[in-house]
Length: 96
Length: 345
Image (cartoon, rainbow over the protein chains, first blue to last red):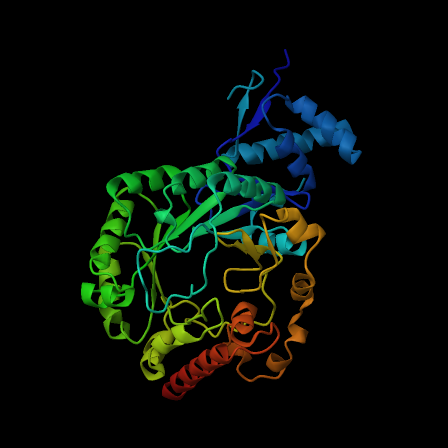
């Protein structure tokens, strides 16, 4: 059985869209993280209502990449964000 | 997707924001009223009618929309506003990283807990001396030293990031070592400064209180002195009017806190109109200035020691591209220090 994972941004983090790139401030406010355009799209969509396959579809649509490549990108990026403590994952939409 | 897609890069983000005219860092002066009368204070202009909480909420909404991430509350004394925490908590709600500049004298245990809940990334407090006589002598208010120290202790105990700042001047430079010992005991971050700024009206009155250059020389090359530890000359224009902005208590918009060049008023126009769609010619001119336009600075031998500021230049001379005499003096002082240091070495 395939389990759908729903990435959810940490709601306490401050972030802005600076000319198409997402900038996320660390909690101490003294450093920021900057996401590239693909990562920025994934971050923007990671509100907990979409599963990773929805994100893959969106990346394919916006950047015209093959689903296999988009899947690798989405999974890799979500893993990075998870390790950085910026998102959590839920099996149920909208729940952390 | 490269693994470098997540990277800490505040400086380049600010550059990028400035390039796109996004006011990434905004200073919000919520009042010019103050309960102290510091003799070197640069605010010598009337505030006008202060923006109401409702008006400020609308402005904060606009700033969030415009991409502002860092918001610094300052004054006057910001905590004098009875609705300060309404404003500040609304700012947090709108997703700003908040900083607060205060003299600390109004920080009671209850106020300290509210500040803690606000989760500011820093609370900057001015410390003018190591003793009540010196500190209160500068603020003009007896008891202010004790109140400021109490604020530092209260905030530190609650884990609030406090940053103390001391402007070295004629009446406190003799106490610099004692100030160092005091802040060490307090256990908070501290920085000395030595560069005065003109008053908002362009008056140079604050400069009357500058420390003696000979005495200052002992302190300039110190990592705890702002801009003092290296030559660190400036050879590019700043982000004023592009990625940095300042708003006065009555809603006047300025390119930065140090540049008294009004570019609009938020009661009369939206932030987007003032900043992006219909900037006044003066703002457009500021944004067009490059390092090559600073004619007086091009061939200057002090460049590598100079912390050139167009805001100070404008306040002192009325012109953005002119050298500011006081900045030139400070650069000469710094060069003198480095010369002496090299001779000794």
